[in-house]
Length: 211
Image (cartoon, rainbow, N blue to C red):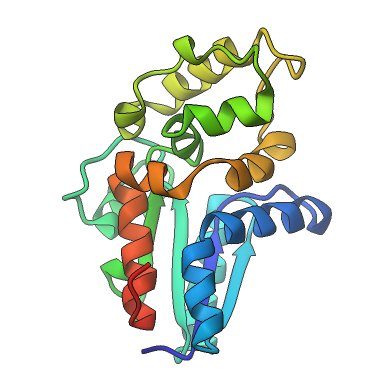
């Protein structure tokens, strides 16, 4: 069992003012883990880093400076990928990334939102309706169990069409992302998104708990 967990996550925007709600939203979404962390008196941090490269660099730096911490990188995969694909291999081969697996880590420390965080929202249309209101057009979304099979452009297009009849008129990542992390049901997301389930199982395994 580890003594401290730090999750370096892509997202949250450019400033502390936008990153704080995102951090809180991610902590709410990971609430079953956080509950066990607190019960076991284990240190816990979710660290929004803005861009994906910033998240990777912060993670690498943390591995060097705090090797005793269970440091985890959480980024978008950017593409739909099978759960059998080693994440470090994907990030090493993906154009625009080319990230090597740092010393002192392993596949478990590399976690991905496939193809992006918004796929988690697609996995719980009811949670999205709570946020956007009754005019939210669920019929414009792909089936929840196909959330991780969609490309980022597919997801963006679905969100645009589904939110158009609502007062919000559109999905905005900074405005809506953190709030949706608090609204969607993690159990539904885990059921439909294998990579999300992998994240929970990895964090639970690190603290010796079933989450």
